[in-house]
Length: 122
Image (cartoon, rainbow, N blue to C red; front, top):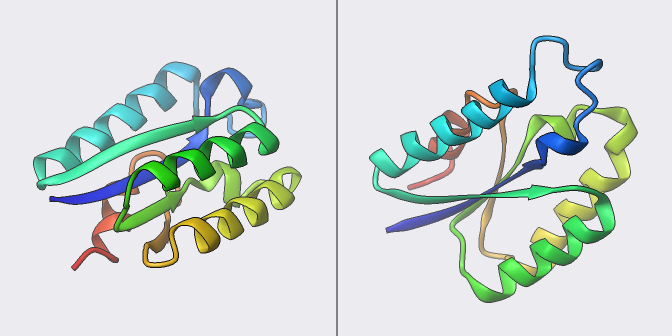
């Protein structure tokens, strides 16, 4: 079974003023829907929700040291928000160092993570 790690912001730290189409409930629902979609496709998917750059990088380092993932997805909320540019770079480098064989994927919103993963899983 293929394994994927999906990384995004924990809803408790999201500035929803920047993302007016989202709420905490919609974000959580999107996370669960995409995890379920991937599981239904026979892909073992796990979300890692981060709260800040430092602890997120540390938690990802630990996770990637404990499990082997075929794909790691960094969510759009991390990638598309200029305020999190350094966080995004840090997470890419954590993946590069601790999961060098994993493909890296990016979604555009919480509801297309499965599509983003499927582009890179063989």
